[in-house]
Image (tube, rainbow, N blue to C red):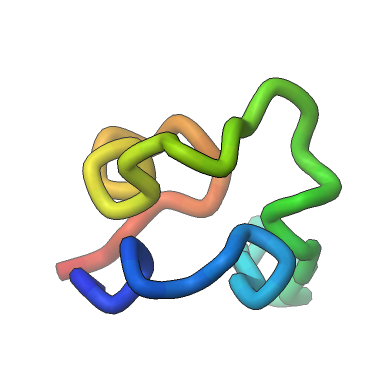
Length: 55
């Protein structure tokens, strides 16, 4: 997951599975308020982007 900091936000797809077992995907650059110099890995691990990591 540390590779997130090596990519541009337009290269990252986030996926989340809902309660009905259907997955929803969106590009990180479609999320408002994300800056190019953000630590994508740290914010992803904190759940800031809506796609919750499962370790």
